[in-house]
Length: 323
Image (cartoon, rainbow, N blue to C red; front, side, top):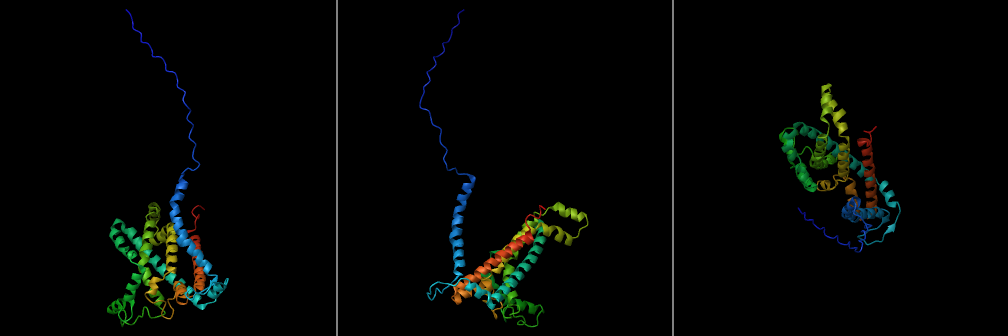
């Protein structure tokens, strides 16, 4: 019996071709950090052109005296405009009104916003419709809100006075001069701002309430803690960072209020609503003194930055949880 043997094919000689050189890595690698920087470049360029450069020009103009309408040359006066601003009684009075306006607006918004946020949190999903309705004022432009409240509070024909008269709260529809009485005009012009942005405070605090641990509240209730104790000892301390952000954002926004006041009183009566934003505007536009207006605005800006830092350190107290 013969067996057929298969012949193995002869091995092909190895072909030695030119060696491929390993690719050199490019010096520029698009890392995550560089990619993030590329994404931020358009926003950074926009802020540099439309925010940083005008701000630098604004601060620099505070050291000069000039009148662009008359075509006068820039005259360097050093800190002369700042001395004029600090020695001006009008600047001091406007600063006091600005502080009073900000305190009125932020205090009432925070109290009302926290109350409504607690109410919405207690209702749970049943508050969805009310939350939507409550946010409607945020969609209204401030100048429109100012005009609306001007018609509501206007003397002789205001709807608010008429409703108070019909409810027998006041004896005459002209009894309360909301926008003509210097003693209450500052509070009156604050009402549109309060009505507009209380919903913002409510939205922020309501979001913060969703992150308050429920087991802590339940444990406190089992220990016999009443609601005031729960609110001031547990809920508010847990909301401290949220409260700090809300108060700083609203405080800065209220301190620069302009449009709602202009359309209602334009700083009157008897300058009782002439806050710093209106003073800076009138100094530059009406009086034609951009240098002094820039100095006032720079002091205004620095004061707001200092107040914001103090608010962060006192209300938020970063790092206090670790100690």
